[in-house]
Length: 332
Image (cartoon, rainbow, N blue to C red; front, side):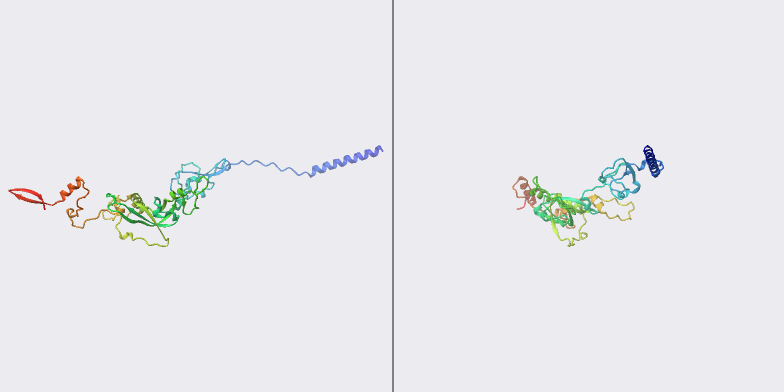
């Protein structure tokens, strides 16, 4: 009995050894140790576009003005690709070394609606005269102005068309091409008084060489906008009327034989206009008529001392010779 137990124990021990050896032989070999690859410093962090040189305001950005730098933490509004910046126009001067963000190129919604060669000019008008409650951004209007006599710049009350076929960009808070905004009071109710006040402010898209004309008309007269059909393209033949006189004259060319170049639109805007270009100057006398032949308005009839004095001066006098002396008497 004892011998059988010893044999069984030996067999179990042998089986255990076999199992251990099998497990050791079936274990996968450990992979060879890999050498650590160093990470380059320029690959650490987030790529960010930086101004390699000063970016002037109002000039398109060129590729050689930009570079890429990596920062530890990504910042909101920055650019990671120079192609997203090339060709864009900054709205402010960006100094060298500054990270570029969206704010450097953001413009107001109104500025994006103005076509090249034009300017957005805000005018304040009487909504009862212009019917601005019916105006919407994108409408086409003519601008009229009424000039009231003030005996200085305006000799007589008059009304005339100032400009034709101008595009309305804004009416109050509403901008052409954008979703209309709604205004209300603290309870969310529409405030009609605020809306009426806002509707009096209208922004027009005006050719740059006509801005001075509109500003003078607004300053000296009462503006009225006349809504017109956008398909109506009829306008006055402005080249058949006298050209408005510029206040500043262009320098004469050194070569007297070279004819002076015509003023560009921006030149006309810089040269400016006088009030006579808007309402017309005094009525000219016929050629060859002396100043003394101008019609006399006659004495005033307000009963004042100056009026009586003027009346006495206006009575014609006759020279008479009496005993060698010359005297003047009022004609009967």
